[in-house]
Image (cartoon, rainbow, N blue to C red; front, side, top):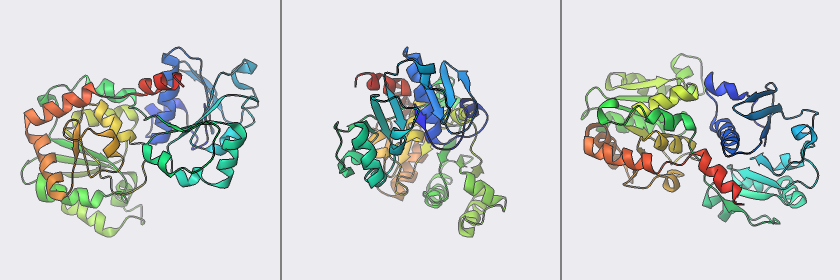
Length: 342
């Protein structure tokens, strides 16, 4: 497995917040090991170590994979040009796991890499396949991602309505609809569920609240301050296990869906694995949430606010949605199993 993003070690997942791209890469590597495979995972930076059965190596290590032993599959993470990486043995059967914007894959360099290597493209969303117009030796397929294991584990401690707090959680940044979510909370949720808390995990907004980020609008910072008495809290993202505990303690996970180009929905899968129903306007959530069963896809602010309020306050509605989310959760182990069938 090859990834060329930020430098990270697998233990970083336990020590600091990692992006969805890195968390998914780690989780899939460990899932493949759990299913009996020998896995070497290479990434930028970090140190060489064996962790949870995965041999972690640096991307540009001079050593051949597995010390020169044969390689059955090469899985390249998102970056098509990595298909030409010198560590890949000649003639290897390659997969490209692609969860980004298809415009990147339609670029000339990416197209050429796909043609030269004959790699199998694995998309994470049907829309990607419809937008892709490149020529490949193998027809692209779609395999949805899965939840990271910490979230399913956290849910085991929070089965009952009473074991959860009057809490809603959202993970976002200042450009993905936070202002509208705060406005909905202020107008529809806070007045009807006194004492309820909305935790917003957004690194850029957190630093802006401390006066350390000028890229976030003053209007948004002022909106947060004006709604502190209505339970709005801005938090810095935490390591995965801590985030899993907070999501599993909540009765609703709030997703916007109208902004950005997310083709993965990692946080949605994580929330559902934590048995926490999701409320969203749509976007990638349309492919990840069973509307009316594991959460809601809503048309407007009124519906959004009313459904969040019901999940926080109505035991029966929450219990039904939470149980359905728990029973239908999809993890990276499922993804590994589907990759085996290719």
